[in-house]
Amino acid sequence: MRVVFFGTPAFAVPSLNALIESEEEITAVVTQIDKKKGRDQKLSFTPVKEFSMRNRIRVLQPANIKDHAFIEELSAIKPEIIVVVAYGKILPLPILRLPQYGCINVHASLLPKYRGAAPIQWALIKGEKRTGVTTIFMDEGLDTGDILLQEETEIADEDNSETLSKKLSEIGADLLVKTIKGLKEDSIKPIPQTGIPSFAPPLKKENGRINWSKSAIEIFNFVRGMYPWPCAYCYFDQERIKIVRVKVVKGSGIPGRIEEVTKEELVVGTGEGMISLVEIQVAGKKSMAVSSFLQGRVVKKGSNFNEEIPE
Image (cartoon, rainbow, N blue to C red):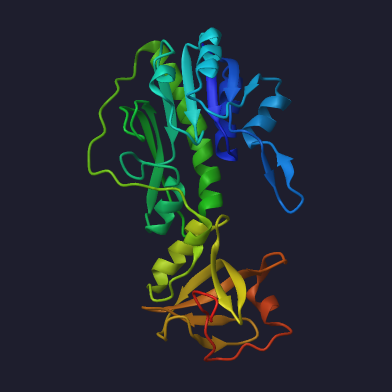
């Protein structure tokens, strides 16, 4: 089957690789434009572009997917099916109408839960115990199309958005191959989404600020969902501290106040329960165990982690 693949981040790479291994004809890959990153502002390719170049697949990077010239270029390829995996933009109707077998999307949630750009992060933030991957026929809405296949998986307490993303990307790749096979054999019957939808809007850098008045379990889930980007953070002695990993501990304290300090442990009060910081990162340094952070600096019981830089 002639496939055009739309995708951008590392999450999409296993799905593209699975299509190659299943010997589908990948006629082109569409990904986001190159962007400058880091202090030196070096031009950076998307993970999907890097993978496609290594596999000698044609790469298209339209600045505007609604551009008439791009749609004509896509039409000339004559795709039988379009596959979308975390591309990052909603496809316009002229593209949705192009392929014979339609456009299918691999979405990292159990739709209709967590429609939108950040389903993995929000599932963790909301404390879900299970999630999964859904393949759907795409329509003009935001992840509103009919369901083709769906697979569930457990969310482990140790998972963060990085580890869960890797897990779901592999599930999604396998589900995509099964979906295309089912469409070829006419063995899949699309079904409308049912139930109350929830949404997973994109995250911004400022969304990582910790609200210590929330409960310990809410903060635990928040830290997991925010790692590795934008990463949960707060301020200590006017220094921005990224909170990489925490655990819930027994006890109670004042939200944001350091209630216990040892050589190995830093325990902070919350709105309900307490949080022990396990791994943190200070500006300009790599992530470190809290025991390393405590070496060479005086951190006193009763000091406060602030949500904002104090005036």
